[in-house]
Image (cartoon, helix red, strand yellow):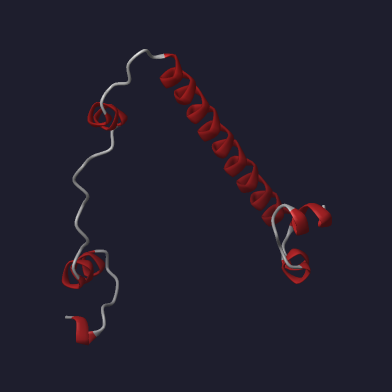
Length: 99
């Protein structure tokens, strides 16, 4: 278990010995989920590469991006004042200089 934590999870020995077995299990589950997601992404990419390779004529990039669900408009970032109002509405204390 120690060698897995050192190699795969890239943990320091001191961090390993401070974890409970439950916490270590959670980290290992997270690692396994991350690897499974990465594998899914690679399969998705490989499928689309092959699908494009089999087409006689590629669709336009705009159509592909439209169909992929990627929005052209990106949400603007919230201002500091908006963030502070959200924090106050959640019951968090906001420093006086930001009010």
